[in-house]
Image 1: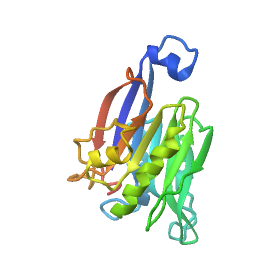
Image 2: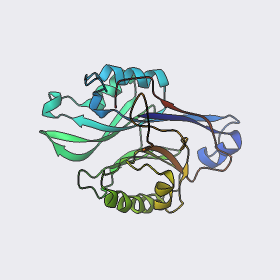
Image 3: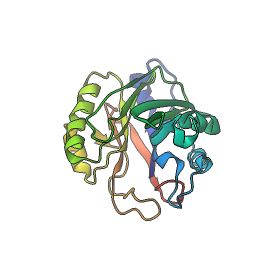
Length: 239
């Protein structure tokens, strides 16, 4: 599913987040997208459709889940890099598991190149997955939590601990595989607040009936506001 939002950082906040800056408003458009490795609900694998959705939304940041890196099933293609070329964005990949001669995991597309990227392992009987990327003014964490409830609950405090030392605002996004937003927020120890609309369902595509995808924030100034929230249900490009 593809929740996205636009965060507006007013001029008063610029001084806090950006240091010395002119009197202007800073807007960040953030998208989370489980692309199912480009395979849609029609079982057709078409990465171009995924790129079209991203280009239509025109985000600054895209948190990606379920993508391959040089696997046999994708004929050795580096899927994050292809999406980066098709969208004109910088691409980063984080290995969750070895798979079919390559890797499978999460990724990030961004208009600006990150200063640094690292992998944070999480408990996961299927795969352990989170990508941590630092930008000049904020930090982005991309995750895809385990399907196993015990592993989900064990993962959230780790994310909280990793971000405890961040001196910049943190944006956390991905497929949490958890239906209750309060369980997610409580598991993070109250450190994060929801930025996406937690009343909107996000899965399956087309006719969503459950909520498993979230965009959360930590350390954002109180004057920062979300000016737009939406869940895109108009495509068959993913599930």
